[in-house]
Image (cartoon, rainbow, N blue to C red; front, side, top):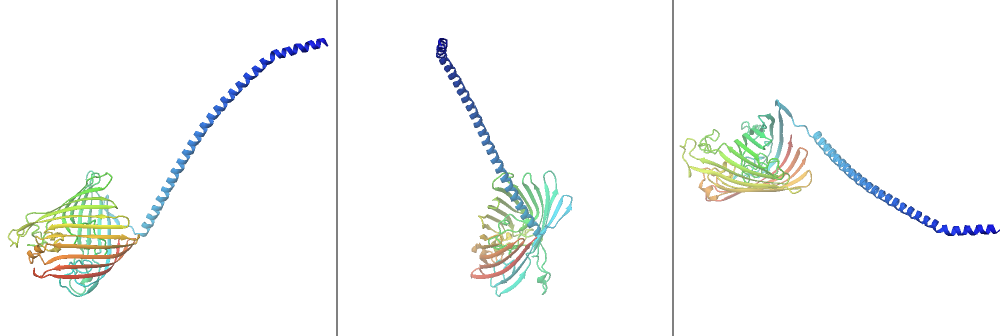
Length: 476
């Protein structure tokens, strides 16, 4: 028992001495484990953060790809829709007749058929029906008829190789205002063809330069700014009243001023044309007052446009008239020689479904370009026209029009019976309602004109006239 007691006492003393050491070792081990665990947790957290960043980047990349795919699908659908619409249009419209006249040259046939049924309260200047413009002073009697002389066809030639970057082509155009075959009761149904334009083209698409050589519209005629009408095409509404210009043999040089750049398109045109006048001498054999002493008509035009939005232009004209004629021996009334001058400005604005057009001019001695109410003399003249149109939808539209020409009363009386016929002022109004579908158009139109005139330089007379017409139009 004593041994056991001694042994137990020694064991108790050993435990008392070693217990603190064991406790200290256990605490150190726990701290190390905690530190290791913290380090592991921090490492795992860093890895988790990196994975989250990688995941977000993947999400962003996926969203970008999905957006790109959506845009591409939308573009594909739009392209398919456009192609489908084009295919429908192509299927619905016969292809333009095209053939080749030489290697690399294509020839296209274009034109339109135009028929107008009309009734008039007076006889009109330039003719009745599709070329009626203002009433003949003192005319009486109602009339009616159907006119198809606007009908026109032309050939366009393209692709002719010249040299370097220059390519060639041509344009040949006819209508049926060339008179009638005879004077019998059957003549009205046999209108004769008339040459309108016949010119060759030389173009350089690299520099934006071009030439027209032959017979074409002069630069004063507002070819790209005409009023909307399908009854008055060869003789537009307001022709000779608020619209001037004519076709002449000659040459036009055109230069794009900012070729290849963005923004509004600028173009300068310079033209020289054969001279002409009503006499003396033959106006159809190059010996009239406008042909004397080699005095061509010179014109210039500055044109700027933002396609399908707006367009502006300014044009100028000069020529010299020698009433002594080519031989210089003809008796000259009032003046032997004078200059024919004109300045013109106009434009177009198309905001949404609206269209607004207008032209104004002033000049002297401009009967050869349909000014002065076609009175040949040194007569001052101002005039112009305005038009407003509205497109209700893709088929229906309406247009209102007003034109005016005011020759100088003093000049008209001064040149009376020496080229002047006593026309003092003309006003023309028009309104139409049009329906268009594909290559077909139909219209109802009313035209009203008031002409002031004198028959002796002293009296004054006013003549008014109306035309109501229904037209059908088909282009090919």
